[in-house]
Image 1: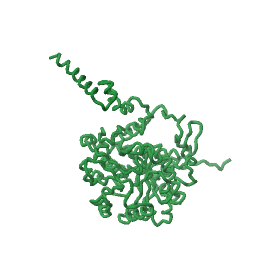
Image 2: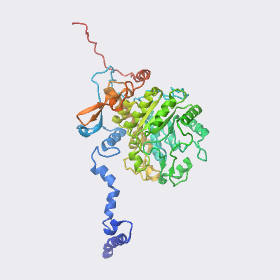
Image 3: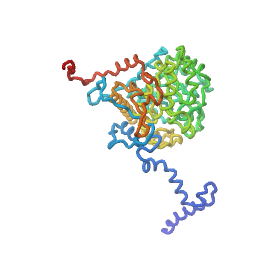
Image 4: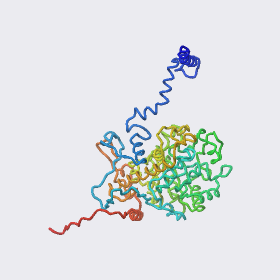
Length: 522
């Protein structure tokens, strides 16, 4: 019996060897039977080995270990400080942003020890006010969760995000997959209308205005966002891999289960700037909601045409979301992820400059997305003229994402980006919603503290002169010079700044109790 047991492993190895020698698909295994499997095993766990064993704190992409650690600690309410100085290679990194603090300022910060922890950081502009929308509003939070559809994310992940947004006053963008029950847990919504019109289309797949009106009337939808393109795959259309098209997703979207769900690359309701603006006004008149667009940045002719068409004030979008090419929660071909669409810091200033030249920036709420859920990136975006920040992958980290990069396979091990019921079960919305709220509050507090360091009351008042871009450690250029902004660009109007200052004037005790110096005596 003992001999039999000893022979079983040997027989198994002999069977594997015979299979390897006879198969024709893999040359490595024909030449190196049995031991060749070790290569494939190591390749399979290579990302995990690099992530947890090999890579340094600031080497991984898309998010470094330091960045993820800060988000995790912030979400959990743990110590998110770093000791012993930066380990970023500032000396040899071109394009490194430095925020310039001020020694003195007319702004006296709140003095109580927990100042800023519960502040909402309102938007500097009222969305929809310039066009007189019936339901114009001022977003409560500069930090919001950008578009991620149910389908791309699990039901528990969507619910956790929505509940976390409800706890913080942040807006939750539905993504193009439609407005589903998992979005209805208290958080205010931006309903995204993609090229497939999921959630507002008829049985033939055409846009249905009455369905849209019924939908937004049944949920806390605050604005409509027309998705033209996104940073991960601009010009390609949405892609939900077959593995993630469950029966529930198929029913919600009106597609066949188990098959790739591919949205068209462009809209059928309009074909140029003129017809797009007509459609914008149609949606706004029918719903009373502010209406905006989301797009990555490539060819600038579209943006020049849009600014020219809005110049007379008769039609216009209420907000513009610029998505950087480095963004991307969705599945995409490698070429699109790597090489199509400009990165945020290049694309956004080009778009903003076009509207600033036309004198239109005060009428538009600008939203930025693409790794802007980190305070340093966020400050640069706000200085460039963003009024709102859309965070996606950072929100995923806050509810448990470990950057396994399995989003497109339906095998997300933590239940965030999957439709596998067993994997999704591991994500508890009651716990993770609180963590998302903790992350949003911490990011807002850090933004407020940086604003305080720069001598202003709100991070939206930081401008391009407060940021310098380094070329190694020998020289730097003001951000204004890098992007070519004229005086006044990147900041709200004087009237909007005054309104924001009034909103941010805290009731907490402030400094300044010492008597003023008598400078008249000799």
